[in-house]
Image (tube, rainbow, N blue to C red):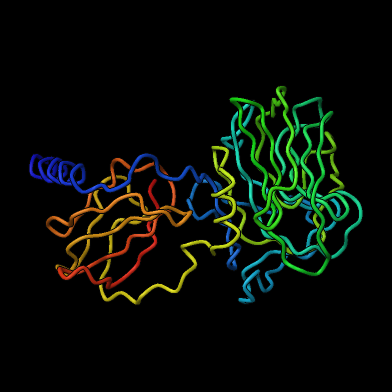
Length: 315
């Protein structure tokens, strides 16, 4: 036990001197790629179909054309839902982003929903007609315009410090307002519908396909939203095939490598920004100081050449 503690201490000290830009890791708390699964990439907020799911849930080609990387099949009352109350509620800051391909531009449908159908206690992020829609029961905003049958990136941010709400379409700011009375009731997260009706059935099932939902516990900046739109999620890039193993993954403190060829690593957050450069000691690096979320670890040899990129989940 003492030997392990000393090793962790050494790794921690090494990380202090090798971090290049680590001020705050990304605040991603849920990420749904829908790559033939309803699981959250962070491992914390997996989804289940609603008990009386009336449609036929299926996976279709996503925003980049890859098969089985988007989810579809919602009817009016259908939704996907977490098993427990989601971590965002009340006046918490938040960002929600998704790629959607809608079948029609009529009615109002939900993409992400929280809360209840009471004044200021609901949080519906979705589409109304051909516009992005955000509403909190009593206040709402629709903005932008898109065409059915094409993939569009939509995002909403809410900053609790000033009440600013912003809507983005394909990386561009299309609407903003100030709401000082957001008070979202703590509920399970819903995907593909919302909490418009306090008693079942719901009526806002999304008509189309949804891909790559990301939810953050902060209000991302306009630059960060633009990055989400213009740069495919870093974890989806074609990684260099690795000939070694890493463990454990998910990791809470020390990440180990089975190869002695790795001399250092660059660590990137989910937005593609480099947050740290770490020296590998005894085939290990320290992950203690990182926030929960998904990271890409770029492994380099003694010549500084990248030999593999690995997706790591910090729990």
